Amino acid sequence: MSGVWVFKKEGFRLMENRKAEGKTCSLRRKVLVYLPSGEVVSSYTSLEQILMSLGWERYHGRDLELYQFHKHSSTDLISLPKDFSNFTSVYMYDIVIKNPNVFHVRDI
Image 1 (cartoon, rainbow, N blue to C red):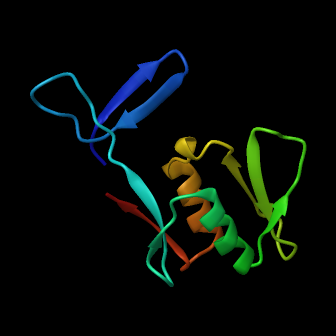
Image 2: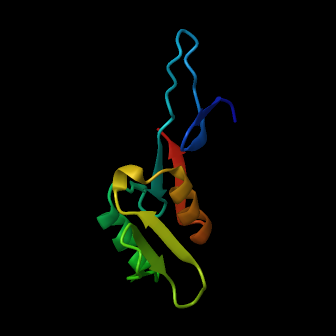
Image 3: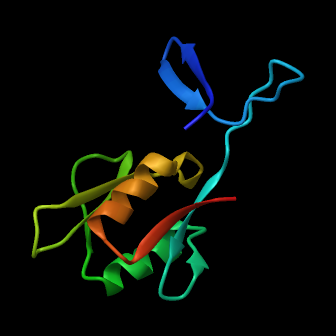
């Protein structure tokens, strides 16, 4: 993995694909792909439909900032930010790990 670590007050993160000609960094975008259909998950509506078909249920907890899903057959919990624009690769990989061979994270 190559890139530049950017430190800010809120924390730090790795910025990939640093442009050589300037100080501008661009983050490689990633998408979550549902492997059986090849569909790129582009909204929580489509993701929720897929997760429900896999046995996940919407968990209505106390946290109003998150969408959460759980399975009765496991102790796993998927927590996602309410705003889809904050749906980053960290959340995507969490879904991939909890649903092996069903999802894939791909660079675009």
